[in-house]
Image (tube, rainbow, N blue to C red):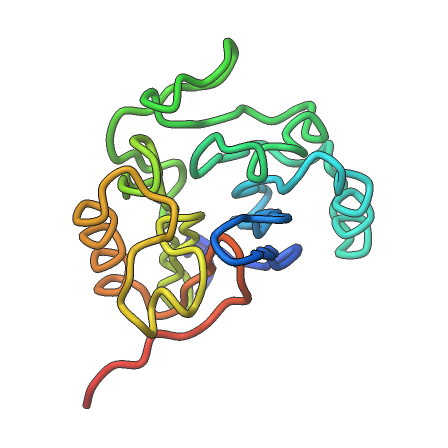
Length: 197
């Protein structure tokens, strides 16, 4: 069918990591994802600063030049999610205004459609300005940063360990689970939501 708008394609560039010693986080780096919609390229989160070269190489291995990325959405501004932002020199940066983003970042305050099928949705609780990106492609993808950091949070129905309000965080987690077919968490591999039949 010619003339139909293309569906967004979601690809994980790298899975996030999270290493704890008891309650202390030893190392953390966010999942980095790429959304492609026709010629548009959107990155969600950019990992830790010391992994920037690995990130550039991962994009090159996928056949994507970092210079071609048009938009970077930071789900929140903790350092393990923004370390590679400067790799995307031609991209517009987006973050929630409650995260107090730096000058030059587009400040969001509510839900916004970036492109058809690509919507940024507030999902607070981990931080005041946590956001997720909901993508309506062949499946419904939720790229959710630390609003849902690991598959364990889903399986055990628990809010992120680090949060500003556990009830608010759980409400956001439930919103993600209710909407998504596939979740791309902040610090884990992607997984599918299991619906009761």
